[in-house]
Image (tube, rainbow, N blue to C red; front, side, top):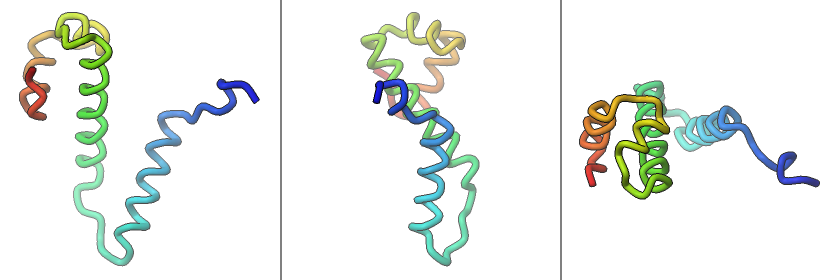
Length: 82
């Protein structure tokens, strides 16, 4: 089997994690799940892009398709300000 066939889509990864989250919750109600998923995903993307760009904010902003100042604010928000 090729590597292409082994890849899982980002959507499928999120779906599996949300499913596991519900399993872990059991009978407890989920609260603010949408916001939590967005924040968890955003933080993970920022961490990996900054790592990929070796901390270079200009390149990271370009890779993300956002303004450098927006990137700076997001990094500060998540305590990732390098």
